[in-house]
Image (cartoon, rainbow, N blue to C red; front, top):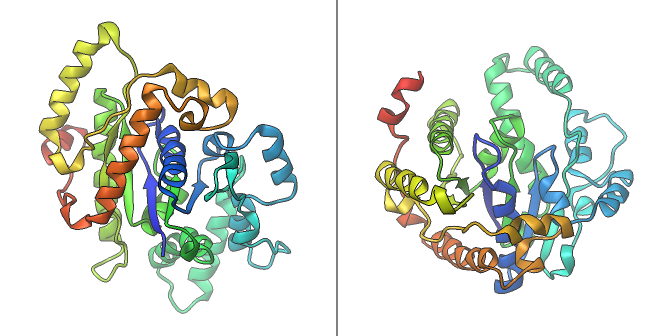
Length: 313
């Protein structure tokens, strides 16, 4: 059974998609792993980082996207017959073992979700809406992954910024979650807020919950240099005091214009410019990820820093 890793952060613009697609590519290309990328963000950044727009447009016309799979779950009586294996695009970017379940600019209708869950609560044996919601949230992404999970070594979920239904469902379905961040105060706050929300999410499912996700680590993606170096070093000193060593990845992704430019080629930087400093850093980070998932008992079990968040309540 494949390991499911969700890439999440409450704050946008922290390099979440960049981390997801480059990590996935390194796992497949450098380590021979079978990897699936699942794009849970309506911005479809992960999809367009692995497919050119014209190819995605064709896939969307053929209704082979995550949006179609979600709609089938929300409207069980619909005529949509598409299955998860049929929606997966294999060997993207011509990398053997690197597959993509494309996202969509329209993933689900919140009204239809509310209607579905309301009807289940009213007409079912269990009239507790929160239990109905939790059950739907727990099964949403898991049911999409279930038909293919045994075919992969890793499944990477590129979650949307914030804390919407798909992000929560992705977290519930995951074995680990990765936190990309910038060395900036608001990014650090975003990490702590997400940790707290994940802790509350586990509590809401009760003691018998099957939610097993744990923090794999925080990955810092540097956003600038030069005059900002001193400031970033100060922030990083604060970070090392806020989090334990097991919560922080040793490898960090340096500022590299080649990583940003790779988007123009609709492929990850590790393919577009494999010898750049950013690409080499992603390769080393991938090795560290493999080591961490091989020894989950060494991961931190700490709780969110209460002192840092006290003033936010």
